[in-house]
Amino acid sequence: MEFWASGPVCGVFVYGLWPGVFNAHYGVKPVGWGRLTRPATAVLSAFWDASDAKLITGWTPATNRAAIAFARRLGFFEYGRMPLPEGDVILQGWKKWA
Image 1 (cartoon, rainbow, N blue to C red):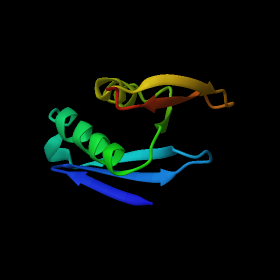
Image 2: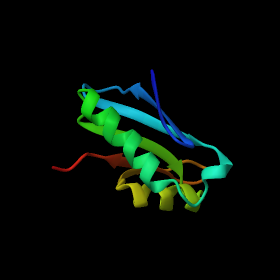
Image 3: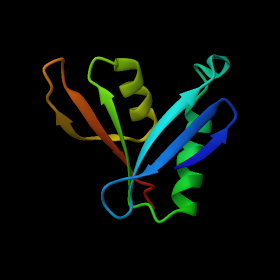
Image 4: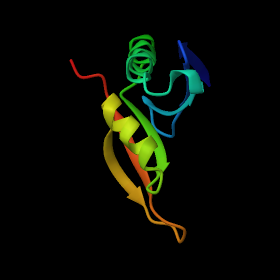
């Protein structure tokens, strides 16, 4: 598990179940709300450059539209869905494109 931070954003990265795949989660300070895209992208890019990552993933409930929109602004794309009785959970992926 690794923690990376930039300004009001902290990202935690956990090695996934496949080589080069990492699961990520963000924590943000309320003071940064509305101004998180640049520092969050910096965290993703710095981790990507320092690791052997081939894909960074995140799971988000489909009902959490704000978190899904934030992930899209960072460049995450929908990779799949896990249907559960209480609603879908969206798997999103991120790669640093050349």
